[in-house]
Image 1 (cartoon, rainbow, N blue to C red):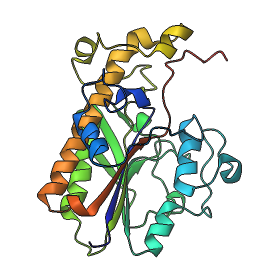
Image 2: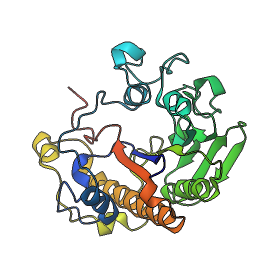
Image 3: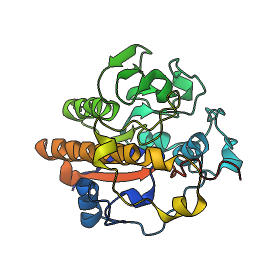
Image 4: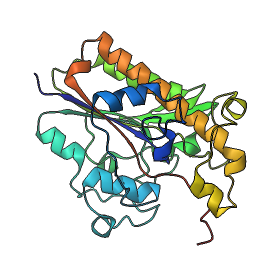
Amino acid sequence: MNTPNILFLFSDQQRWDTLGCYNPAMDFTPNLDRLAAEGARFKNAFTCQPVCGPARACLQSGLYATQTGCYRNAIPLRPTAPTLADRFHESGYETAYIGKWHLSCTGDKPVPVELRAGYRDHWLAADTLEYTSTGIDGGFMFDAQNRQVDFGGYRVDQQTDFVLDYLQNHESGKPFFLFVSWLEPHHQNAAGHYQGPPGSKEKYKDYPVPEDLRALGGGDWAREFPDYLGCCASLDANVGRIVEALKARGGYENTLIVYTSDHGSHFKTRNGE
């Protein structure tokens, strides 16, 4: 076996119980369930920070928030922090990043090279993707040269198109470490709603609501849960697209795929605590 490629697939604010391999009632994640059945599935895994930026800083650096200094959002990961991308680069990997970054505090502006945590070879990202795009109408990210790259349509699908383009054109001769950071199923901040694909409200209206949400009361889950599940289903469908692309190129057997999220979602049921 050659040195394996590593594909890290990262969702945002996705609860563990939205996957069928953990919760059989959720029957809309066949691609992720298949990966779980064929690979390793963690029964117990915990986010080190329940907020986007700090959790991402910990993951990229391997350090706790007390060490990174990123204990809340809007604190950039310091340029001198050791990172995953640095280590993979040192090991001969091509390092690539596509999607939401949230570690530079640059908002809707490009992320400067020194704040990209060592991702050197391919870059297509926005620091706060929820402010440069919407879930349903597209938006923009920035490439390695800080040029704006526009896209339209449903965000998960379009972002995955960029991933497929990278996979189809990877010809460096090096194994790749590709980190894909989707925004979904995070809510669209400006709208105050989760934005599932059209038809989500009807399609997912009868799925069981997690007991912790019902027990706490309040929050916005009664209105938002169907669209949230629609986002999760769209992620699964796009994981399937990526797997098929890897198989078509003959790279599937030599690619380690990791899927996880930065933290879960409580649908504002704990905001007053």
